[in-house]
Length: 75
View (cartoon, rainbow, N blue to C red):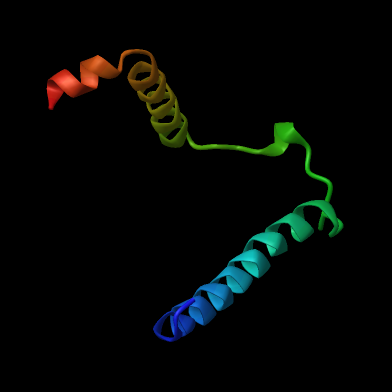
């Protein structure tokens, strides 16, 4: 590296360390920390409007994935 790229290299390394710490914290909490309470999948309640939005999002994602020309023709 030339001398004027050293600062960018140091900033990129610091940014990479911060990113690794941030994302590894999620993995540590996911796999290595005990759960606060054992939750059963049937206890999760979602309001009806969230369920509708979720279903519409899934259908639109599948439609765009299967028929991408449909979206391109709309634009």
